[in-house]
Image 1 (cartoon, rainbow, N blue to C red):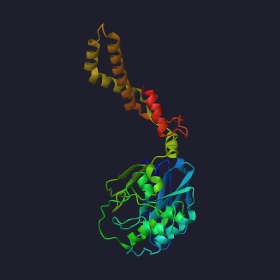
Image 2 (cartoon, one colour; image 1 turned 90 degrees about the horizontal axis):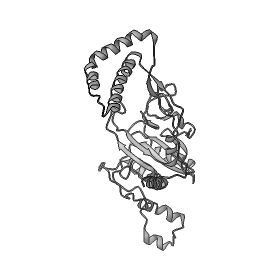
Image 3 (spheres, helix red, strand yellow; image 1 turned 45 degrees about the vertical axis):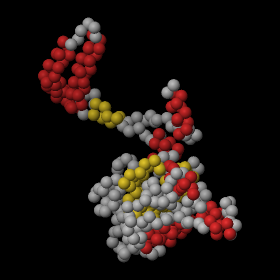
Image 4 (cartoon, rainbow, N blue to C red; image 1 turned 180 degrees about the vertical axis):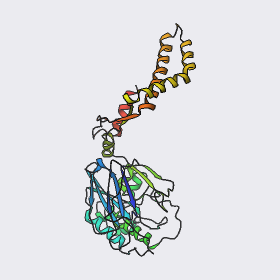
Length: 348
């Protein structure tokens, strides 16, 4: 596992469970409370170095876990809604689920916030439109100009076209739209949220589309889910690049220099290796000549050194050495265009 953030739906845990997450990670969960049996639930597993910028919101709605990620795009915050809505025919379902999520979204949303929703909506929407289609004649009749808020809301879909993102979605789900599907489409229209699945990737706001650099539907793994495939999404912004450039350097393995109690084992290992490789070493000595003496001698010494080093590793093992050095991060103003200019100059 090497994700910065790993989101699990239907985690089926309660407040008394202790999660055994990988070293270097922490977790935050929202558990279903209305039923005695463990069910539903949302869990977010994240790297410890993200603690300072992740702000988990405690809310009443059990269908969403809100995470505010500070200053992810310039001075804007990402409001990430981790969603799990039970199937509409389930005893855990609620016809108010989308309304509850929308109410909380509106309470958090500000001008400095961009929104992304990800998870399992159990909504089948086929390829129906998730945006309002305005009537141009009516707009002219009502004399609604381009600086009007109503005009901006109705023509939000044009921002997709400006970023060369398809307005129409493609989807393998050509079946009939279910009730949750219609509710989700209305939710998107009401809040100017566009479905990225079929355009780019999973559900996200239009302002995030240009920053999604990777998306993959990972092959089904029964260890992860009983039905669903895992989604892999990568955001690339100045903030995320800065985070990765300043992440701790992973430890490197080096051989243990010496253990006195194992010296006899080491000697035996070297002798056995010499017996196995003696013919090759003799051939290397025979190949040494006056023309390439230094090169041939270096090759022989490297082979002999490798023999001793391999014997030491087999006998004494290795140790992990951690470095406190960090890669130098680019300044916030040093964007992709600056990188291209620098690479162009260095290539001359």
